[in-house]
Image (cartoon, rainbow, N blue to C red; front, side):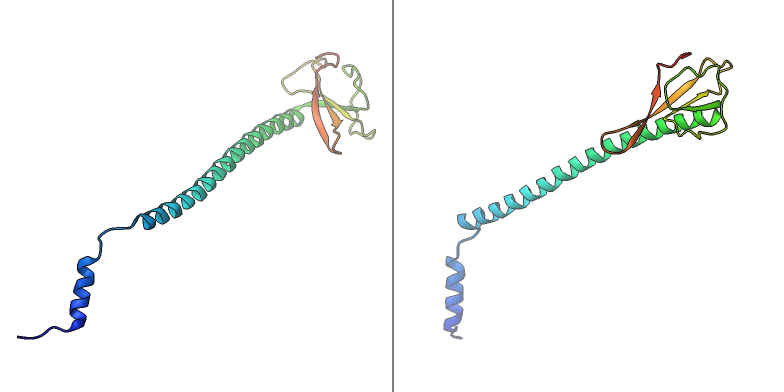
Length: 144
C-alpha cells in the first residue's frame, strides 16, 4: 500500500473545511461596486436624454425658421412693384424704384397672387438689442 504525502492530507483538509459561497463582506463590496457603476450609467443616460430633447427642440425651431424664410423668400421672388422706404407709409400709388438706393428699413411689394396695388406686403428691418437685425412683417400699412 502506498503512503500518501503530507501535502496531500493538508490540501484535502483545507478543501474539506473550506466554506462554499461568498462571505458577507464580499457580497457587500460587490454590491457597492455595482451600485456605483449603475449610478454613473444612469447619470450618462439622463444626460443623453436631455441632450436628445435639446436637439429635438433645436430641430423643430430650425424647421420652423426654414419654413418662414422660405415663405418670405417665395413671396419676395414672386412679387412685383418693389418699393423701399425709410418709413412705414402708404405706397399703394407711388411708383416703384428699380432698387433701394436710400437704404431704407422697409421693403414693400405686391404679392404674385394679388392683382391690385392696394394689397401690398411690407417687411421691416428691426434692430435688436444684441447688435443683430430681425425682419418683421408689417400689418399696419395702408391697404393691408
